[in-house]
Image 1 (tube, rainbow, N blue to C red):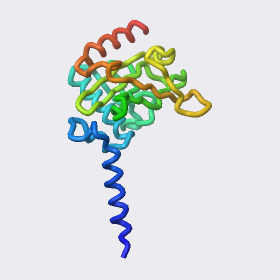
Image 2: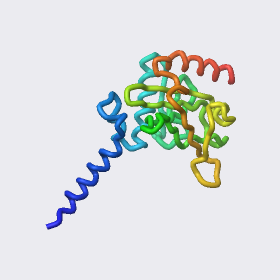
Image 3: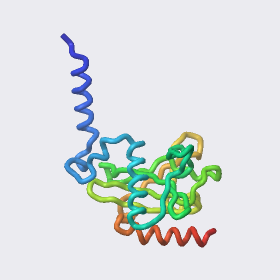
Length: 182
């Protein structure tokens, strides 16, 4: 007798093994690879919020009807400035991070793009004002959609990002820069 459920479970287990590349096995942050990309994004947003709050910054998520609004132009407000947070895990091939769905059009409102790169045993980040991102100052933006320039991806290697230990000083510098722009 054919056991369809067992066949499917075997295929899932086999593909799950392939999905978890060798660089992620038995690592500090390996479990993040088990999450969907949407959930990884939420991990990055909540991680930055918790880290910023622990340092002493005032943070809040966008609200709608008294609840977190997950379909907002921005993901987190820190000290009255809005941050779009993108989270990526390091690829097994070449070690790059691919930050997806970056918007630079004027109708999408945020002050700063903050990218969080999660490696097997390290955390990296960098941040840029929206204007710097839009003019290519964060790096080359590649369109994610054929024949449009609405949504972009940004690929960064670990050496082009900042170790998370420097988050507080980098955020302070960015907040001062944003304050001076206003």
